[in-house]
Amino acid sequence: MPIIQVTLVQGRDEQKVQNFIREVARAAHQQLDAPMHTIRVMVNEVSPQRFAVGDVLKSDPPAGEAA
Image (cartoon, rainbow, N blue to C red; front, side, top):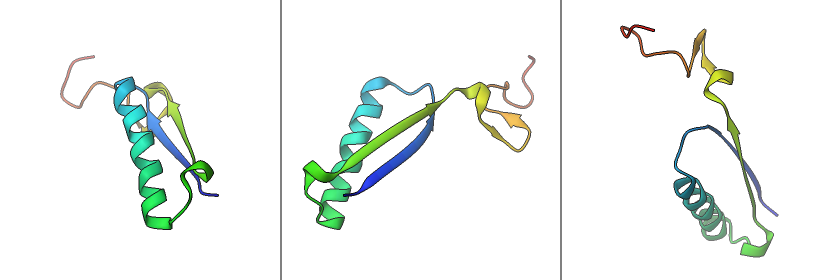
């Protein structure tokens, strides 16, 4: 039973995230020959204030922009 966990930063269109989940499940089905009813896909969304690359938060304004 494939269990697939994906972490995304919040802010994407809900329909896009749902379509992504479906496509990930289809890819697992096709590439792993896993029966669709055995595949689990979980998306965890993290707020931009809780995600950083180094010391730069995703919620920070882009470099060069005034705060």
